[in-house]
Image 1 (cartoon, helix red, strand yellow):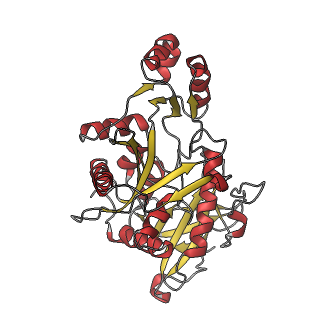
Image 2: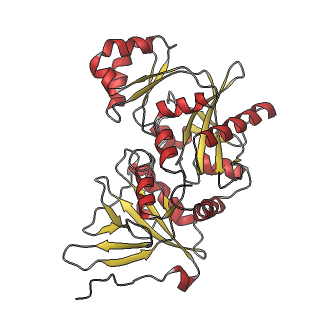
Length: 382
């Protein structure tokens, strides 16, 4: 019996096009957002230059082949998309020398899905943005878009992220870290440490995104419940002192070789209506009450300082390809760095593409540049 995979799709050598595997979905609470991001990229990517292989990861972690159709992956009124389960399983090569992705089905001979030149991981949160899947791509010796293992892992963990920023001499606001051990060993002491901060405070899972599990706490009596809510998503919790001021963000692009990273125009988020902050609902389900403006109305010195901070943070963390840097402009005029997102929201209406559009880089051009950067970067240690 012939046990070799049967080719089904032409290779780059045959078509002249680059084969891009879009990987999306995943096991995190941001599964639906990842699907929506994939829908946007499927619509915008240059089909004359790229062959696209959509690969979904179900909520249970199974890798499956998904139709090249953005419609089922879009967020619609009353419905959040998700990757449908399937009897087939997509398998990546786990070693150098092969870029063949296969599909395995019960009782069937494995078949070739495609030969992949580069992976574009459109995954947010744990098991996607935290270095885990980046490590898998490193094992497979496959080019991929975005930051490497260490930068992805460190910037996913808000406690380590802030330590990197402080070590680089960047201004960081007051915060407290509550580890799982501290909470289980002496809950009262952990709460006392937070009480030293000025309220209101923001209680956050250390390793989550899209504002999942975040609570704004004004009354110290509500603090314990907020920590428990964050611990549903991550046993490690970060509590940040609230900053009165403006939330300003920039996109960073590049980091290849000796070239300095490029930093975009500054964007600003203004949340209206009943939202206490830029939470999950405001980001994805209530766009009417969220205003994103870019370029933001800031002075030249403030713009230059935010861009400087973003470039320093990007390089200090060892980021590559894509990141969004979020800052606060306080009432006194000081700029504080809040966080880096190594796989920021990436729909055309998200902040990262919008600040680059304001900088003269369109959404399809942004996709193209990120893939080009990934292909130029060598695999393995660099």
